[in-house]
Image (cartoon, rainbow, N blue to C red; front, side, top):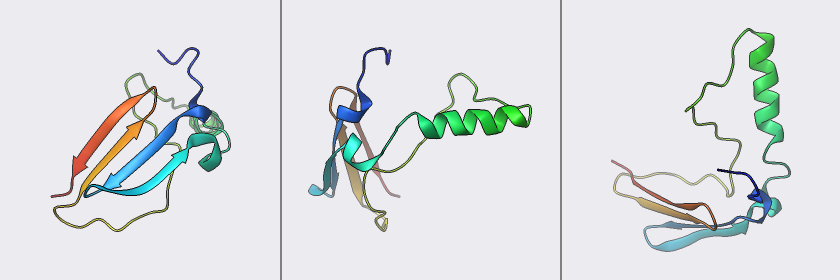
Length: 89
């Protein structure tokens, strides 16, 4: 549940192949985490559509885009949220 979660205070540490690619606090990278979702919901609503339960919505990026290469392993730790990793195939 996101109730009481301050997304702006979330620290994101991303590593590419074990080396830190960026280390940032959300509010320093994204002005308002909810504004893009509200905009999307309003635009979809104007077209008779909606964000459906279970859909994943990405609202922006915490760091600069980086090239992906086969075999790269990316890991991200988001304080108070969790962690995720991916290996590019």
